[in-house]
Amino acid sequence: MAIERTFSIVKPDATKRNLTGAICAMLEAGGLRIVAQKRIQLTLAQAQAFYAVHAERPFYDELCEFMVSEPIVVQVLEGENAILRNREIMGATNPADADAGTIRKEHALSLGENSIHGSDAPETAAEEIAYFFSGLELVG
Ligand code: CDP
Ligand code: MG
Image (cartoon, rainbow, N blue to C red; front, side, top):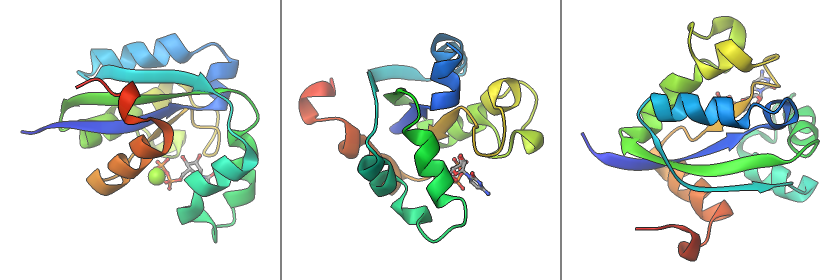
């Protein structure tokens, strides 16, 4: 198995409830290493660009408003099969469908306010990491 990097966001519903540490502990316990991390607040234009793939979906405006409602923690995770592994630790998009012990089952409030984002493929992981982190912020 290959060592990969993936991109993750602790979303506003989680930072607001002071769950950043609890969520990062679940990522670490799941075998991923946080190799870059910062707390930021997105502008609406940045949120819209980040979620541009969903621009035609009915939930897009609500999603972008939610993502700018509080600061978020953006991070790069590293580990074996990190992209898939992160999605497993996160759980299904809708917490009602998520397996027990996953971040979304334990912490998400709803389908929209679901506590965490994770890249879905190698291409999106590379794009999303580059959107938020410069080369200087990424150690070896
Ligand atoms: O985040 P994930 O990759 O699991 O799901 P997505 O299909 O890429 O959707 C991105 C985000 O949009 C979700 O995490 C939810 O916050 C939100 N969403 C929503 O509000 N309503 C939906 N029906 C689907 C997604
Ligand atoms: Mg997605």
